[in-house]
Amino acid sequence: MQQRTLGDGLTVATQGLGCMGMSEFYGLRDEGEAIATIQARWSWAVTSATATRICPRSTPESVAGT
Image 1 (cartoon, rainbow, N blue to C red):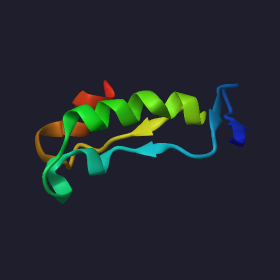
Image 2 (spheres, one colour):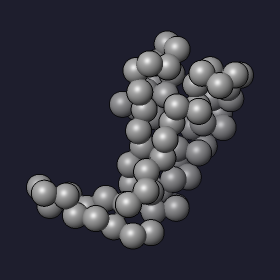
Image 3 (cartoon, rainbow, N blue to C red):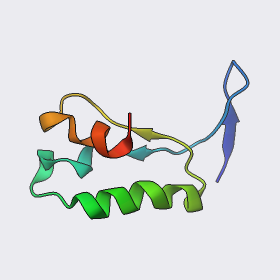
Image 4 (cartoon, rainbow, N blue to C red):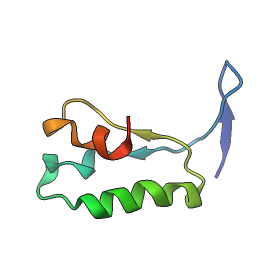
């Protein structure tokens, strides 16, 4: 995974994990699968996860821990 260094010196992966699909926004969700995916991102060298507050009940934020 390629890395980028941000202005403050923080190094992050060039790709992040989008968590919007882990909510009920697209249909039924599986919280266990969402948590497993977020935990597995470290083994993929993905160092960031994004979530948005437009999703029902802020589900991605609660699963991602943001």
